[in-house]
Length: 244
Length: 297
Ligand SMILES: Nc1ncnc2c1ncn2[C@@H]1O[C@H](COP(=O)(O)OP(=O)(O)OP(=O)(O)O)[C@@H](O)[C@H]1O
Ligand SMILES: [Mg+2]
Image (cartoon, rainbow over all chains, first blue to last red; front, side):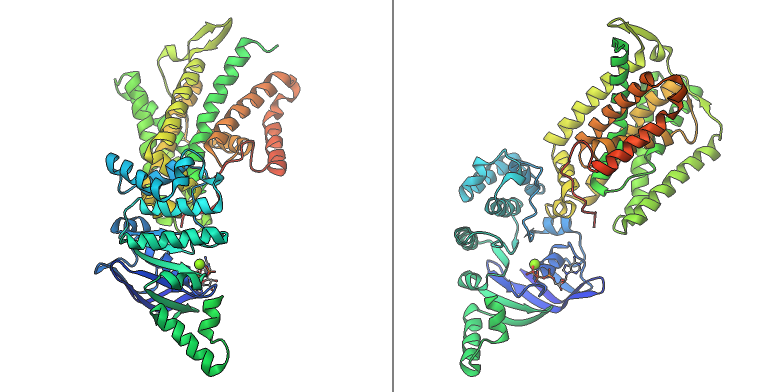
């Protein structure tokens, strides 16, 4: 579904991605892992059009989308839940969701989507008319995900959805991601919490200072780490990164 | 001392200034740009009034509608040809552009019409005095109150209940995230400029109606008032702009009647002292808004 080939991106003089290639297939849940500053968010920003890549190809269902505007890429079917949730704090929960449905709005469909959101996130029904800024961190994360789902994306990208949440809420978020995947939604997940992510994903990419260090299944990643531990009697680079 | 006349005239002046500053803040909220060309939108509407009243038999209501529409159009066109190409550049580039647009439009008026003022004749009832609550005031002072009330209610409904309004509020808060919802950047920015120009056009009718003349630099005063009012009221919300407009009107009229004749000419200086006091002690203005400083990327 999504195919990224040799992606380079930078912030002015700072190079953040040096030739990253990755793929997400229909119905897959794929994790993009790496330590702080590895370039995970930069990758998602480039795919969603927030940041213009300097080189490389990004294809959604065989259509080139690199260098397109964020609003165009959203219409093509990629929805990003940005790092830090980015809730519209001055808008109500209702208004946040209404904007999420900006491109997909049709009265009856919208009502149905809202009902579905309320089953997934009962708290949002309670808080429907409250300002987004009054929600707790966990509630805001739920709103951010719900908002992204309103556009019926082909691919949902989540940037550190568990960041800053209490352990119980982290459990809930991972359960939710798992259940979204079960519903057939294709997901690209960026996480710091590698251990939890590895439990639910189909495949993993590991980024290190802007380049791919590993790609494969969670089992392969774990066995690679095990071997490294056996042979060198300590954590490998990869393991240190994953456990961070 | 505070009679009905003072109250009506103050509400009337406040209404006008509220519309003046609202027009500036609509664009500021989304682009974080103080548009120095804003006064020129008032100016071009003034010249539209002049041309239509002096050279055509167009009835007054059509004249006013066309003048407002012309200001909205010019505002939109400046966005399209001048601001859009530099939008993703630095804020300085945007400011310089807005200076350039301002100077360009002033010079266009200078060359196409005249550096000298032109008389604008609105219908005579517009400036006729009427008596309400024992107060004798020009009819236009009542009309501006009604007009401002209608526009404020209308804009509130637009911002609260239409998806465009919601998107504009969202864009003023988090521009990039709004685009991630699928809202086109150009749509909200164009809408802001069109609303800004419309408000400038409405302001122009009352501004030019009062002075009965238009000249190339007529836009300087409204720009300055909008700027001062938004510093007082708060640049980070539409409410702040409206509050600032009314507070400015109240301060101005109060100073006008309180100051002895010998110091009345320092009234503007005193207004600026008040602005400096606000900038020092409450730089966010009376109303703390929710707009962030995130720039359009
Ligand atoms: N807006 C920016 N301006 C300049 N440099 C940036 C900017 N954002 C990120 N960078 C740099 O780009 C590199 C990659 O950053 P990125 O945000 O993609 O990392 P990340 O993997 O998402 O990290 P984290 O886990 O902390 O979110 C880092 O070196 C970072 O300092
Ligand atoms: Mg990040």
